[in-house]
Image (cartoon, rainbow over all chains, first blue to last red; front, side, top):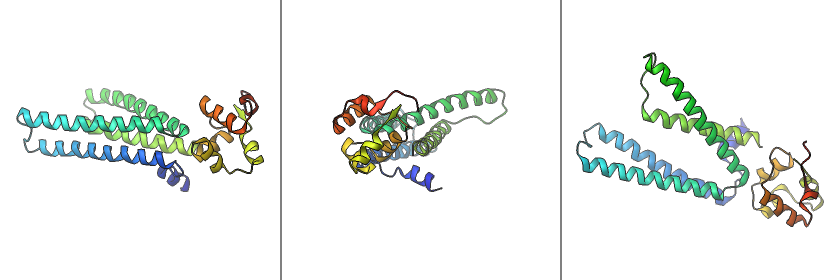
Amino acid sequence: MNKIIDAIACKNLPPRDIKNANIVNIWALIWAATLALNSYLSEFDWFSSTLPTLSALVIHATIGIAMILAYKRFLKQLDELERKIQLDALALSVGLTIVGFSSYSILEKAAMVPDLKPYHLIVVLALTYSVGIIFGRIRYR
Amino acid sequence: MKNRLRVLRAEREWTQADLASKLDVSRQTINAIEKEKYDPSLPLAFKAARLFEMPIESIFSDEVS
């Protein structure tokens, strides 16, 4: 259990990497908040005209791009073993999500399962990415 | 890839954290290299060679463990 807690807490990473990771986390939280807010506002016909829709799109996309740039900077400056762990986790996450969703779509077309929503994709990506990082950190301990 | 990092570090009475600090990597990276679970990048291997003032092939060999 301690192994898993240590893996989640990314103990002993250099302070620079922890600082960069926190910047990425803050951008990711803001990005997720704008996504949730847009979803909430759309329930009340907030996006019935073009201007609010375009504004929401631009704000959300701009924050998303800032998050990607922060993550790129984080990866570039990251400790090399941790970078390998992150990239392996990304590969696992993207691979599992593509295979999982393509398989699910077969069942969906046969009307055997409920329709997928876009947020399902984000949740699956985030979960598989997190699991990949924890496994990677335990593997190289 | 095999390496003599643990021996060279012990000769100098450095901890893994000391060596990590000198090579600007995490202690986990040093630990994983010493346990031969992870092969360092070429720049890191050269950095280690400069730190120990030895040819790179005296520290790392391509022999499979």
